[in-house]
Image (tube, rainbow, N blue to C red):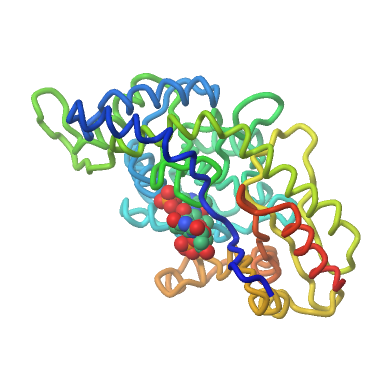
Length: 370
Ligand code: T4K
């Protein structure tokens, strides 16, 4: 039994004394929001760090997703995954669009590209895949389908900060990508998020939409919202950048303890390690097959909770089973067998920079029954 609870995650916080000078600067300037100097600097630094052309900072990842969908002027239906955090579909609904759920494949837990095309109707205008756990989607195949049907692609890359595939940022795929800088993410600004666009025109449009859609002389020609990141968040981001490589490296060490300790247990499945991907080690999901392992996912979870250790079932229940989606005809008409299985088996193990290597080993021992 642990004295101190072990949570699935804890935010990385840099030394407080390094944050104070930023606060002093904000107090001195009196600039708290509306595109101040730290906001400008963080956008520029993130373009450089992530290797992407344009970044628009937002107040959080959900608002970033709402703005991204709005920016593309979509109508009708958007194909997406039921295996994600609810924000993915909520943002679709908030834009007056209909989510159409398509199953995932068990190796990536991302949209099954072989099933997308059959869900396309004359009302489909976009695909919104999620790089779940930071595992890249099959972006080339998704783009091929999108091009064939003239659809936009918006990636929910909330988990994919800094992830590269073949040396290229996954955030440079599709028309737009969004990231989350929530407290629970690899890179946090307390709350926060961003939209990555590929053209200056699109960045300008998003920057206007996140500021009430003001154009020249504070005139709005469409319904924007207030999606701006403030100066305290932006300055936290600047300071986090100094430490982010170090925190990812530490998370890698924890992930290796898990991988080495758990890769040979009957009934415990891990996600494949992808050789061409530089990961951010944001989550460590395991998939528990009760029949083969001897304990169900829920029983294993309860065992941990009894020891003051709190892994999480990201993502259970499926979005399509949430009360606000279960009556939608799209959610009901289609079956998602793989999503149902992974959702009923998944358990994300604690993974963060305050987790000691000994605690990680202890978690392995519990799963091994030692
Ligand atoms: N798309 C996807 C695929 C997402 O996963 C998310 C968010 C979004 C979009 C939307 O992005 P944001 O609008 O959030 O920027 C958490 C996060 O709140 C959420 O950001 C995240 N995904 C989701 C997967 O997880 P909860 O409800 O599980 O968080 P909570 O409060 O239970 O925190 C988990 C653990 O973290 C706690 O047990 C303790 C620890 N914790 C948490 C917070 C907030 C701390 O130690 N300190 C803290 O300040 O949703």
